[in-house]
Amino acid sequence: MYLLGSIHVLSEDFYPLPDYIETLVQRADVLVLEADIREESLKTAEIAQLTMKAGFYHDGSSIEEHLEKSLYQSLSAVVKEAGLSMEQVSLMKPWLLSLTLQTLELESSGYRSYFGMERVISKANTWDKVVELEGIEYQLEMVAGLGEDDQLELLNSTVEESGHIKESLEILIDAWEQGNPGLIAEELALEGLSGGIAKRLLQQRNVSMAKKAAELLNSEVGKKTILLVAGAAHFIGETGIPFQLSSRGFDVSQVDKRGELILK
Image (cartoon, rainbow, N blue to C red):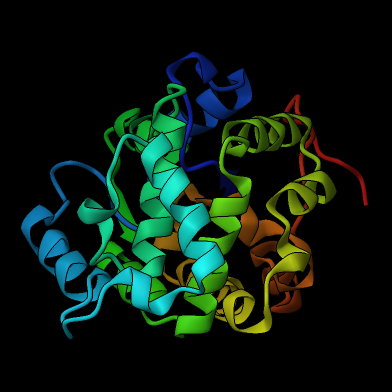
């Protein structure tokens, strides 16, 4: 099994991928993803329905009633900069509004999920099998299930970083190209996440993903060449997927940017 930490939002000029990754993509038989985002697999109507249900207020309240005045004022300026009005986003819950604002800012600079690493890789081979670690429905429910304080923390972070999200992404891309986990962790600000967010969005998921990866390796699928692609944040530190697999007795080694093993 080959593990590839991905970046979910990229620009077209990021490609092609390094030669050794391109070769690996062609050699692999089985693709393992956080969620199967291939166009033929997406349940668009169901996802839209779930987003409407979990991402909007249905109790008669609006985002203004859930924010402190200072954050609401700052948010209003960011929403206007994004080309929207507060009326258009007033019923969005903080988690969805945060993701929407991040997406719009990145798209204005040419960065799109359409060019995300797993989406491009999923199209690059006629895979024998594609396996989901989680699924989009699960991921939506997970983020929507954050407590209000955690959602407000995410929104506040997005507002504070507004105007610099592209810069942060480009630093992350550079760290990825260097194969530098420490710099990736620093740029993703993983240490700055509050306990609830870190536990729900990373730690619990990493354990579950590593468990499923181990099950695949020990199954009939494990006799084939497997490429597992998940967000780079899931590969960092002692809670990351590589460490979790190592703890389960698997031999895990990192390769450098040339595709050569880094000796332990």
